[in-house]
Image 1: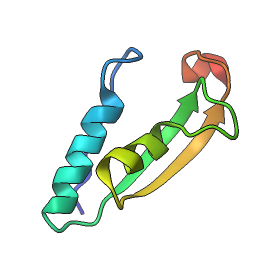
Image 2 (image 1 turned 180 degrees about the vertical axis):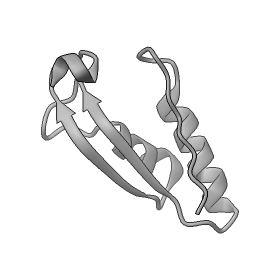
Image 3 (image 1 turned 90 degrees about the horizontal axis):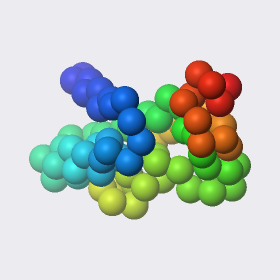
Length: 79
């Protein structure tokens, strides 16, 4: 089972779009894809987050989010 980690050190740099593109490519190649968002910040409890955006852009991927913090801060600060 290959694992690919997409990471970055700033907001709005394209991590979600790159993740969706990689996921869509893997799906098109017949692979099963799961996307995990370790910590989502700046999004309220009932709002769609980055994992939902990956599903919207890439298609039928399994997605999950481990923690969510409504303040738009770095995860360690928001927690």
